[in-house]
Image (cartoon, rainbow, N blue to C red):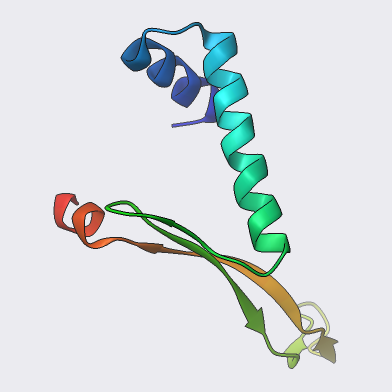
Length: 89
């Protein structure tokens, strides 16, 4: 499912226009992004938790040359499915 299909599904289920559904989805994504950027986490009971994880610096290899390269440490977004979502899958 892509974003357009998700917007269409939200609009149909909620009885709103696709424009309103798009605005709602964009607002949700922006709120989650802002919270994660600030170091917080977003928990949706029954669905899951979005959080930030730190990935340590490490050595990797260039697949073409085999040369060792350094991969910088970075923060990555993480999602952990909730109990109810896991049970439905």
